[in-house]
Length: 568
Ligand code: PEP
Ligand code: MG
Figure 1 (cartoon, protein in one colour):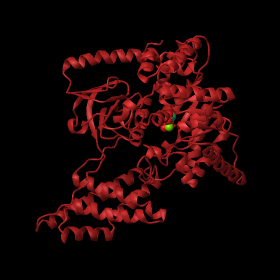
Figure 2 (spheres, rainbow, N blue to C red):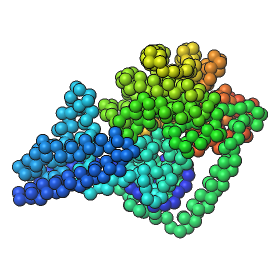
Figure 3 (tube, rainbow, N blue to C red):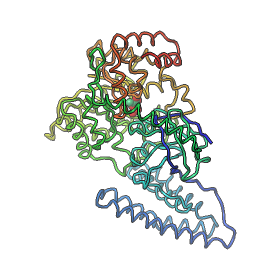
């Protein structure tokens, strides 16, 4: 049997399935027949004991490494033992004859709603802890095993309903052979992470979890967007050959990894690095890249129990700056929101999170969090060449408002006698409104970087997370190339640096056209560097300009993509 989806990160993998489904089943209102009450109560008391044991064992395992986080599990144990909650659940089971899971769900839900409505944020934020405990109790009641993605025992192919960026960031990258998911867009952050680790991914597989079985053997061909279940031996043989060809091409590109990134006519194209963390593996790419084109700092905030303190952030940013020495490091201020949720802070549900309080808007709404962030960035500036970049900028007012926040953080640091250097301030061009006024914007900032991942979704009105509308998310839409040109021309004319850090900048098909439009700095995941440098090496500026001119003349995305496919 073959399942179809969309290839989100190219590659081929053969292995067995690990179903990852962290969604808790929501119970229905149901009752036990008279006489069954005590059995339900016993069941509840038993899982309560199991929950306390599980929480204690997590607490012990992290106590030394992260005492603050360990404290959370003490708080969770207290919730499990909370007298009022337990009296309520017991009464619902014994008096009203509710089944245990329904009693747990409803009683916790009442508490969670009350907490959420409390105006004091110190109290309302505790709702997240109650939710965690409720989910733990329900998971235990349903016998759902919690999978620790960070410590997998053997190589697996993950199959999920929705695999979130925080899941991808925490997974054991060495053991994940491929990622399959029912949801998720091709430029979602999960896809970007998979690509950065060279892990094949296929998203948008309808009915995946209903069809697939735990441990089932599969072949994943992400280039084609297909998954073959229980492959017969001839299919295995075919894919072994295909995999060898894939590896040969990767090895060929690999020769260019440390090349200087010059066209065959000798023009240097700066190769920046897109990073989301600062582990040694990620930073080892500093050996063959010219800068950090975007450090997605929001990942520091994700998957943790408390917001990162100023000193912790400072050490992280300092590490990258020291690693890149005289080369620029673009720290993008946190881009929280959209598909990037926080576990340490509940964000209000929004109808359209990608059009909501994301990134800079979140920062303006949470000035204290923003200030801590900027202070840490500024303090780190003395250790290298820091360029600070604002995401989700809509207008000049946004830039001016951000400047006020930065000025405020600077004057605080000055008063405290803490040192910092002059930094460059730039913006992401990822919202059409600023791309259209690029000529006005470039007077306000020192540099810009085009974020095609968002720019495409906003220009084409196609949610980058929703694989259903993927045909409308047209990376090669003529409107995109016209907007890129407008932005590149404005910044080049003003003599200010402009780069490209969206996924399209690492697409070997699009690279010649972008260079032909005047782009001289492309930033990408380390895994994409060899193939992009190979493309650049095969190109002259004259040829690139000819390609760009032809692209600007073509009327549809399909025609542009087809043309670019054979342009070199
Ligand atoms: C982009 O939008 O192109 C970008 C680089 O930012 P992100 O993918 O993190 O939204
Ligand atoms: Mg973006």
